[in-house]
Length: 547
Image (cartoon, rainbow, N blue to C red):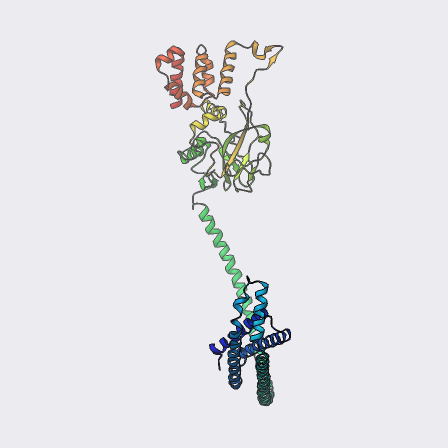
């Protein structure tokens, strides 16, 4: 049974009445003994009511506490009515007990309260309070006894349930153990049967393996005999294939029935077969190279014979001054390197630095030999250092044909041609090595033309005046980097009176420079600057170069 709102309200209201009545007794101040006794009884009643209220909230909602609940509610109702009656009797005297009343008036009111609370009424009220307290205490004891009995019954029921569960589990475990023992006996029986079966199978397999072993042994002997025969046959076939391979490779490398040849690898890394029956001289070989690399990267330098040839097997440089039949051996492999001139200091000229701009790594090797860069895997060869103005940097660097004045002038022009003029005449700069596989680097020291003072005078002071002016022109050319056409014009004007010097000077210049310099001047300007004789000399030089 749940706690009703009215029952809770009764507990609250009677507690409030007891509190108010205690305050009224404190204000009225009646007989000391009666006052103290009544106050103690009210406090005790209030405590019992608080305990009954807590028990009421916790336990009295159960069905077995229904009678206790009814009795407690009736006692609370009666105590509430009794307290209200006493409070009404005392309340009519409290109006005179306000905070602003004088002491004389308080004493007068106290007498009235003492008179109103007669002795019989006080005793009766005390008896009622004791009765209410006793009833509430007895109800508390009864409720506690019932609660203990209920808890005992509940624990006894739980114990019986646990005992029943334990008995059931024991029975289940017994059944399980019995079934496991039966299964174990069955497994042991099956295991014994399986062992006997495996033993029988093992004996059968052993007999079969013995038969297979005998068969394999007999087959092995036959196979060994067959393998030996096949080995002999394979050796014969391999020798035939090797012979066929050599024959096919030789036919692929050399055109059939075309006579002696040699393999040529150009500076781009392209291999080609050159037949010695068709190319039988240096002129024919260089002419084929000029036509092959015309309008290609490095073609102008090939046309100027700025390349080197090297035997692939021996690593020796091919001297183009030697006769063609002595320099080129049939069946050899010739590598071509394009010469690139680089201006360097003395320290840089001794270092083996990769000339390809995309790499620039430092390499190990010997100057004059072919070196493969470990970083970019490109091939290059560094030639001995050449000083400015030197006419023979390397005996085998350029070909010098003997017995021909035209070829001699061409070789001299190639040697003495400045770097800026070569860059202007070439379609590929020396610094642009993209796509080139093999180069030969020719270091040129950065040196200037200076006069050496001797005792306060110039060392060339005893030379002719025209020689001094010629040195000034060359110094201005190297210092100011003038175009070679301007130098050509100044030197022609200087040597106007000596045609022999003009002819000798033109031998050291490329033909294209002389042609461009002559074409940029009109006939009147040539007559005005150089004279008619020099103009005729220049015209003769143009005709000779064209032929």
